[in-house]
Image (cartoon, rainbow, N blue to C red):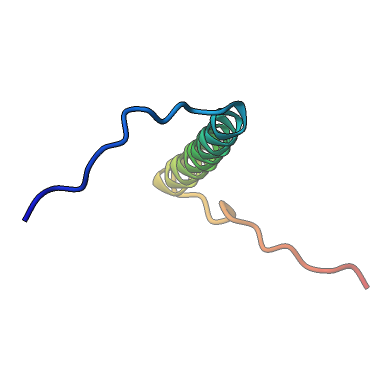
Length: 67
């Protein structure tokens, strides 16, 4: 069984290049957003752990609605 033939004569068009760049940009933005969220979650957890290690009881206050 022969591998599929590669078409070396294919020239990438501006539209294909633009689409590939937009997909890559969306991936990078999503990756940066996930990294930012993860770092914030880790900082919050570390702050909570430090508070609990000091023996405090009000480290994670519960928010209640005002009536």
